[in-house]
Length: 388
Image 1 (tube, helix red, strand yellow):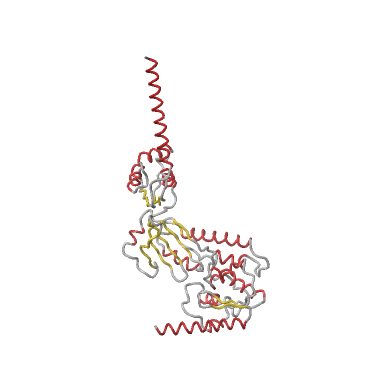
Image 2 (cartoon, rainbow, N blue to C red):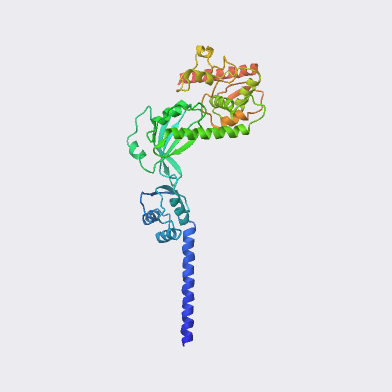
């Protein structure tokens, strides 16, 4: 009898243990395996939020199958007290473990609202946009020039939320003066800028910043990035180039940046100016003359006058031989690399071809034919414009 009791007890115990083991294995699979989401969602973790509150939000959005397993997993991994405030894009199929890792690691918000100050050559714009988690695409909510236009209604309320991501984006070809003036208009930054950084020394790039970030510190970061880009490109430069220092290469890169907006042409444009320097020809490039007129303070907004083309200034490459004394803008990485690794060509001339690009030529006769074609294209465009 006792033997039967003990045997039955042991059998029951084994069944219970197997059941527990199976339950643990199932819970582990639920915790670590792919989650039920079929499209992304945005999870907002409020200040002082709890894992209980977060698990309810995730359940409501269909991101997890069990709030209990989610909370138990956080407890087991010692992360239940490590929630970080912010907005997080939860990708389709994210496991509970992945989500916990994401919302306890912190860092910049990955969804929700973004405010981007985009500093362009012709203007600056403040762009407020929000990520549509389902499509992964940003939806623009507001856009305006903070210097020339009034703020749209409701802009301040939307832009002042604590978890809004803040970004500064520099376009290739902006001048240092334009960057400083635009940063002054960003009321989410602080601090004075004592001096406009040297032309060409700021890296066109996208910079994520925190509310209250120091303007001078941000400019230092831009300069640090540009210095690293220039140093790497100089280290890998082609042989036989007509510049002796990285600074001279930066001047050439700024000219290339201003002469073409077609990425595939940068190395060809660079080859034209390298060939001209090698042959002792003047560079004869309008953007340098324009910089001599504007000093980088805004856009000329009109064509060059003949008097300006004839006037002798350090930046008038129709009059002065060689490179101008400094960069005429802040060139991007691609223009810097083009200046230091130009195509090997015999081109000495180029002119617009009507497609947004340029027609290149080795001889003056060929160039004159290209110019004649361009003049005809201009004539036709004006004729069509007057006929509309």
